Image (tube, rainbow, N blue to C red; front, top):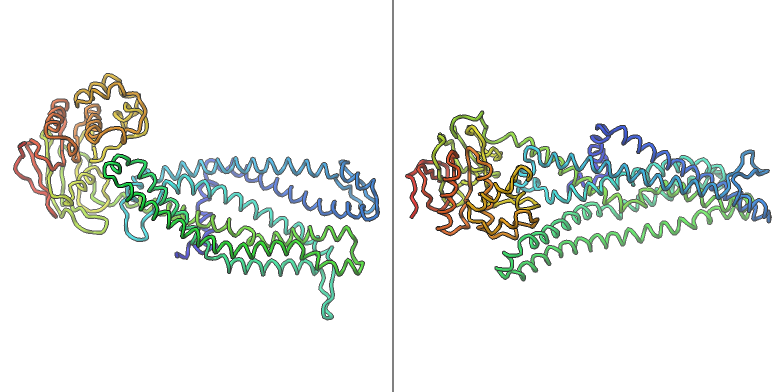
Length: 586
């Protein structure tokens, strides 16, 4: 597994690089104010815990000497003046109320910072994913080490987990650090010295806590280090399984017609088996870790009592100190053992950071690659290619140094064998294909590209017709007119219905609804990739005739396998684009 995943120090650097933009953004002052409020409140809570250890000492000392008045005063009075201390001791009621108030608001402000941070990150990740077609270029990468799986999960779930866990772990670490500083001197003083083999060790309980925690941390890392790559892999496998479920949800008709339920069942079962097997590996590794950490925690509960009892029986410490020292020892040992107790959370956090960091790197690389490929010149009077070379992501050439000029005014058909690169040329003309060289001069005016597979945004049928323009820009009458022109009158009553139109409509209806967008948009140039592949010959002829009559000033370029009547015909063979005799329908 990549060293980046297993190295927590690298994880800290990556995590900071993910956090830094937000804390330097336009929201930085509000972010720092919330962060400061959370930190200060947590520090005060630590201070209350320190006071509680002294309160505990005074309370149990009062119990030891049967001083009921002091006991009840310590429970219910705001301040109690003790003969043994020049400073008044807050009552338990005051400490509890302060603790509840501060802990509640610290959590509330933590969540407020979390959602603000997540919102900022989500907006910027979505923006970077969509800008310069990074989402598209990432989808073209299939080479090992370049594939970014499930970007939807990384944006929706990983960003949520990153902000929540970073704040939780960060606050917990700061709190434990302050706890350590606050209690370390107290433990050193109250534990006193011990003589072993003629050597006097001052504050020996402190050194016992340090040694105990160091051993625990080392063994935890040794036992649990393989959990990091396993956790990373679990997130990926869970997302892959969910993606397969979504595929079934979005393609029910194709699966039902093929009667391929058993095949889908097998694929889903196999995908879940990977989830299960990896989870079993996590379970086995976690079980070994839990055996150690649970034993470590239980021993830590009784360990300080065992260590301090000799001094108690030697009457060098009182009953109050006997009650106080385990609390103080527990605070110091717990702070020193922070890595042990938080190891599972650190594992999950590390995997999340790695996924987000690699996703950001992939988006940066994709946006940089968006400038590659054929150069788009300023729009000219005609569509022109100059020494145009198109390649696949793996370097294979589809078109080699072809030059051609296509003036406006005539319908153009483009044919060629499957895999020759017709759709790739379509993408290159649109300016989205990042592999190749040469120049493309796009024609002047409004250009509209309609792909072979129609896309339907979520919403009403009217929105699907207006796409990518806003729905309110399309009048009902214009939408109805476009539907009638393409023999889709039956859809007019459903114009404002909200459905999953990619599932509701047949293939032929989807193709014609997409073509209706062209009638509505009235572009100067219309590029179509297999627009009538799902239509019968009669409907194909009627549809193309409607396009020509409704778009008289539009130059239409059609990628097709069918014989469509057109005055200009191009044929794409592996490596070259050549003019061919005009086609006539048969």
